[in-house]
Amino acid sequence: MLPMGMLFAFGLQHALVMYAGTVAVPLVFAAAMHLSGPQTVMLINCGLMTSGIATIIQSVGVWKFGSRLPIVQGSSFAMLASMLLIGQIYGVRSVFGAVIGAGLAMVVLAPVMARLMRFFPPVVIGCLIIIIGLTLIPVAGRWIGGGTPGAPGFGSVANLALAFVTIVITVGIQAWGRGFWSNISVLVGLVAGSVIAALCGMGHYGMVAEAPWFAVSTPFAFGLPAFHAMPVFIMLLSMVIIVAETTGNCLAIGRVVDLPVNDVTIAGALRADGLSTMLGGMFNSFPYNAFTQNTGLIAMTDIRSRFVVAAAGVVMIGLGLFPKLGALIAALPAPVLGGCGLVMFGMTTVGGIRELLHVRFEGTRNGLIAAVSLGLGLLPMACPDLFTHMNGLARLLLGNGVLLCILSGVALNLLVGQGRN
Picture 1 (cartoon, rainbow, N blue to C red):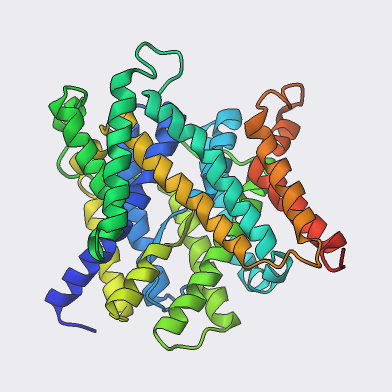
Picture 2 (picture 1 turned 90 degrees about the horizontal axis):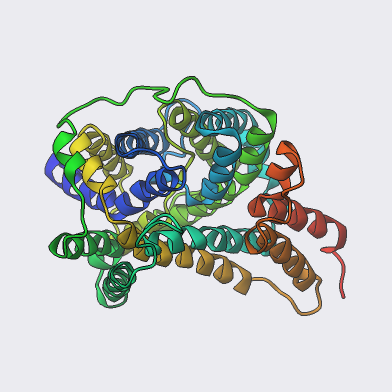
């Protein structure tokens, strides 16, 4: 436990490092689901508040919930593609129902999931992360154009130029910034792009003035959640990415802070993920997992106290209580979001490629597993009309590239992955 001043300063740094990633998920979801400005503001503030609560549960620990390691929790990009598909077919209330259902299942199954990762070798996880990143690229493309294809001004030179400048700024800060600045390159890109847009008369910030200074997020703002078996099943399957990321981050942080990590630690971390995900669904937010960028910050600064991370959680809860801040973020011009989104989603794809670099292809059938899994995972994006004649459940199943990649990767690994070519 550090002195309060240092505790707050280091906690604020952790909050800033993960801030852009936390607000990006509700921004993407709200834009894709065509939610109103006030609804977007509410999602952002709910996301910040529940991220803070999730971080405190994970780092401090409550009974069997939490790893008690310095792990920062934030909204998971890995679940975004599945949530958007569920929302487009079943509606927003079904998204939150699926989130709550998957979180509850994860709490119950955490000890089992901690042992099931052997069915998800690096070749499957790598393909899965690649598909997640590529599935989100079209979202960034629509933002770069201005928001809605076919709308007046979509793809205008002004929109493309603003997105390009945002990309250049974000990449420049990431490439040549040092330490803290490099870690907040996306946040800097968002701020700089928005300032440029405002100077060019492209920003619309009327709802910032209308938003209240202080408000407490209320549960079930979209109505009572709707529970359907298929969305919950798809969400639970998609959460294998959270299981993999949380397991990997527990192991990595355990090495950094010189603490042993065993099945009990990982099970506690997964229970915390499940509980936080349930809480997220109740408070109009999304599934949570460990943020990798904060793992890098711990290694870089060598500040290992889990109470610093808990202080970051307190900071995020405080940020979530100020709707004007959420309104300011929600008012960001679409091309600015598109520029930063392209970088973030591209980096997600690169994370999958890095995972595949650790896979042995020579003398194995891993190449076959990767080829089929990536091909099936890309089908719904490459040919969106392929499954239009399917009914609701089948279309939801076959139209989810992430789910197709998971199922094919696991099945092929069990059937042919153990042998040699």
